Length: 146
Image (cartoon, rainbow, N blue to C red; front, top):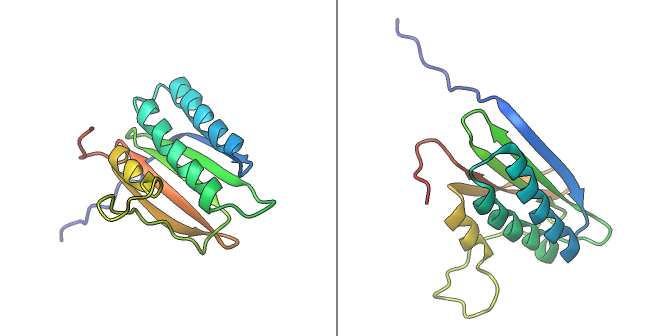
């Protein structure tokens, strides 16, 4: 009888979570706090992650804002050095999609293309209380660094 190998459960080595106001100031603070936290952790992804957080926080403020509700930023660094970024906003009814820049001539709508360029993978999950979490992962094992 052969044993199935079970997926390795990765240990969370560091985490950071903060609620921020759904304003331009809150989005800017999310970017600055991410940069500082990842430098403190010695993460090799500080620059890339800062760009991803800038886009996701901006989207949370522009498209996920509900008056009187904040957004949440979460950073998780795992033992295999994978970094997971999570931004949760109050608009679970607005699921983001990356736009094709060849189709749209607008000045906006390309933020998730930037996220896709910097992250190894990204996605959207339902969160509690009609919210959504947009996440991105950097440093996924087996993926090449850009």
